[in-house]
Amino acid sequence: MRIAVCPGSFDPVTLGHLDIIERASSLFDKVIVLVSFNAHKSKASFTVNERMDMLQKVTEHLDNVVVDCYSGLLADYLKMSGACAIVKGLRAVSDFEYEFQMALVNKKLYSGAETVFLTTKEANLYLSSSLVKELAAFGGDISGFVSPQVHDFIYERLTNKEK
Ligand code: PNS
Image 1 (cartoon, rainbow, N blue to C red):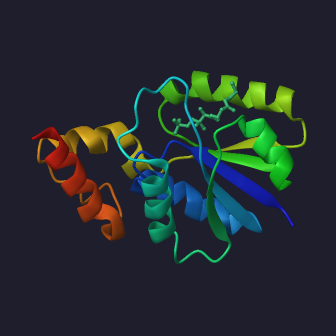
Image 2 (cartoon, rainbow, N blue to C red; image 1 turned 90 degrees about the vertical axis):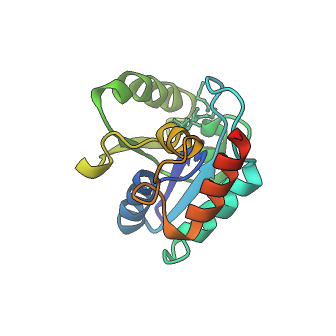
C-alpha cells in the first residue's frame, strides 16, 4: 500500500489545503493528513484538536484519507507510518526556498520517502491560513476560501476573538 503524508499547520484548513489533499488522495492508496508543528510560527489560533476536527469534517468524502497529529519530527512519523511520500502544495516562488530546504532535510533524516510537490490551482495562488485569519478578524467574507462545513466555526471564533 502506498501511503502519503500531507503535513501542515492547518491553522485553519483552507480550500487550498483541501485541493492538495483531494489530489493526493487520487494518487495514493492512503493519505494521512498530519497536523504538525512549525517551529517558525508563533502561537496557533486553533488548538490541535480543533484543527483535526475541521480536517475530519472537510475530508469526510474521501475514503482513503485519515487525520492525525504529531509533535515530533516529520521524518520519524514517516518511518513509523510506513509512508513513501510527503505531499505538499507549492504556491508562489516564495514557497519554494523553504519547501526545498524541508524536502532536503527530510530526505536526509529518512531516505525512505520522497517529497512530492503539487502546484496549487491558480485560484488558490495567494490563499493562505494567515490571509483567512486576517480577513475574518476584520469581518471580511471568507466563504470563498474555506469549506462550508467549517466556515461558521472559523469565522465566529476569529471575529469574536478580535473584539
Ligand atoms: O503549514 P506549514 O506551517 O507550512 O507546515 C510546516 C510543517 C508543520 C509541515 C513543518 O514545519 C514540519 O514538518 N514540522 C515538523 C517538524 C519537522 O520535522 N521539521 C523539519 C525538520 S527541521
